[in-house]
Image (cartoon, rainbow, N blue to C red):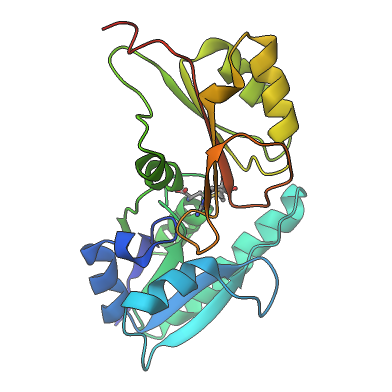
Length: 236
Ligand SMILES: C[S@@+](CC[C@H](N)C(=O)[O-])C[C@H]1O[C@@H](n2cnc3c(N)ncnc32)[C@H](O)[C@@H]1O
């Protein structure tokens, strides 16, 4: 009997934002696979889950995804994670692979899902609340209204997509923005957007969260910036 893989989004940080469906699937699984960027480090995703789900008796297995720009190293990590998951499934274990926020937003999970399905195993995807939706709720701002547009971009590698989006879209979510605060401010100024249109969302739901105006500095990895042009929903 083969096991089944569940890819589960656990929300941005507040354990209260883990869905009931996610909790059920995690508690029913035999093994929980969680992401780390260094061996043995604390996992933000596991930290959320263990506050609200009963993990007793489960195999807890880390999957290493180093913060690497090298495509070869990143695909090596993915291959190792797939091997780990397939080994557990072949032992007849149901596996919950957890990821921060939602599995469809800048997560490596869907590639693992495809590879595991290609090996002949059943999978299911359980969505989570994306970090920028959790943060927008805390900031009490709409991400998009009326006839406005919204772009979601990553500033991990460079600012090219963010600059284009800031120029062309009514609202922009810049993810992986921690080291780009100064460049985001410059791109806004270059397009005549007041800096008050930006909200920084750092470590949302993680204890030391900051949700507020854009202030210069290096905010660290869990940082998202939402930029809004004042279109009033394009005056609806
Ligand atoms: C690899 S992506 C994962 C995104 C995640 N799957 C989601 O749905 O939000 C990591 C980026 O998500 C954002 N992020 C994740 N958790 C966050 C949090 N608690 N507070 C602020 N930003 C967060 C940051 O932009 C971070 O650099």
